[in-house]
Image (cartoon, rainbow, N blue to C red):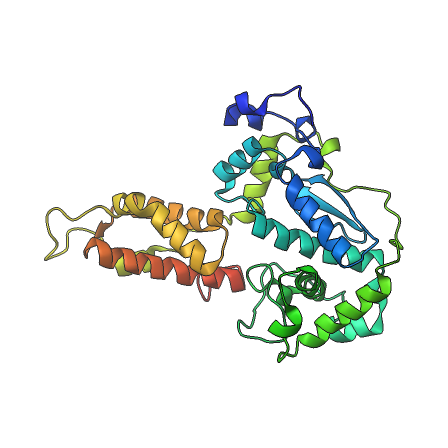
Length: 342
């Protein structure tokens, strides 16, 4: 680990001026080292000879065609995780259970590339053609028994590659009890395929040489402030001002007959309940808190601009707001738009 910079002594503003290559990037000396060891032990338990190189990158990844695993740099140090939390409201992989789910998933990609599995006829019959266009927004069948569940948002249904990686992740997990859990489901044939192919390949080294470690922060001169500017642009839509119809179903523009003189301003109501709204909607939609927070922030801005006030009591208003935001976020997840017909 680099000791030239004491990250704990730096403010967020000072951290944001650092370059990615200035950060500590030793996985072995990081807070996630025990979790990586657990992951490697799982590979040992399955008798797998292939152990992918693991390094700190700018996000979770297994580059196309390259059997390696990148872990996001913010997991290299507790101070960086705190910055990620402050900037993005969430730390993907920051908890052990989530970390293990994701790294097993990335291992699925690495195995797929290491043994060129996508070229196999049986692979394509079970998972689909790998050249299928991948989209961040997909319509999933919540109760489908043709897919396993590992990463949130039914990620296995997004693309054949993700379907295989999710299936592999469940197979690798020593606590999944997959043969029992999925014994009556059609997805069992995919799990049995993974079991068969890994027994065949487990004593074989990777068939693909690694020449490039893509997105390795060790070589990136990008500053953290640039990284977060770009990341926020990716995850936060530039929402147009088309929320007024929904807001006016909950709030009103004064004067309105029958309203109490002390009716609360809508923007004040939002500010008082912002964290509860964000946490509740994020929990039930499984969407990134940053996306939900941006939606609520836009609500606040529009409520202030239109001078909206509450027409009902706090509890009823809160229930309506949470229901409205949840519906809009769910639509966003499927269509990339917050409202139908826009």
